[in-house]
Image 1 (spheres, helix red, strand yellow):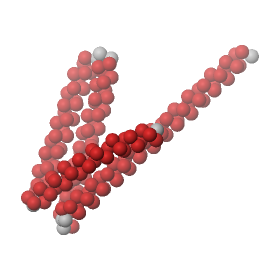
Image 2: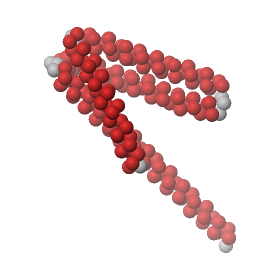
Image 3: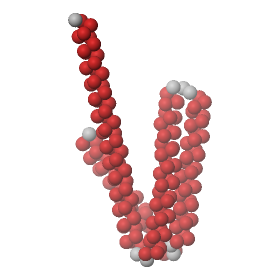
Image 4: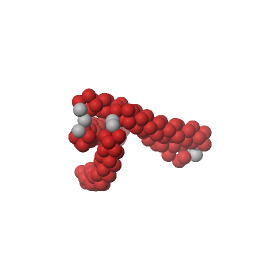
Length: 164
C-alpha cells in the first residue's frame, strides 16, 4: 500500500511538473510573440513618422523603406548573436571555462563589428538616396525619435513588470 501511495505521489508530482513546464513554455511563447508584435508596431510607427517628416515622393520613400528594412534585419541578427554570446559568456565565466571565454569574447567582438559595419553601410546607402537637406531632417528625426523612445522605455518596462 505504501508503494502504491509513493508511486501515486511521484506520478502526481510528475504531472504537476509537466503542467507547470507547459504553462511556462506557453507564457514564454506568448511573451516572444508580444515582443515581436510590439517591435513591428514600433518599426511601422517610426517609418510612418519618418516618411511624414521627410515628405518624400513615393519612389524615394520606397527606396528608403527597403534600405531601412534590410538593415534593420541585418542589425537585429548581429545584435541577437551578440546577446546570445554574452549569455554564453556569463555561463563560461561562472563555470571558469577559459577556452570558452576566449572564444566567446572573439565572437562578441565580431558581432559588435558587424553591427557597426551594418550601421555604416546603411548610412552610406541612405546618403545615396536622400538630398543633403533630407539627410539633415533624417538625422534630426532619428535623434528625436530615439530620445522619445528612451523616455517611454522605463514606462513600458514598469508597466510590463506590474502585469507579471
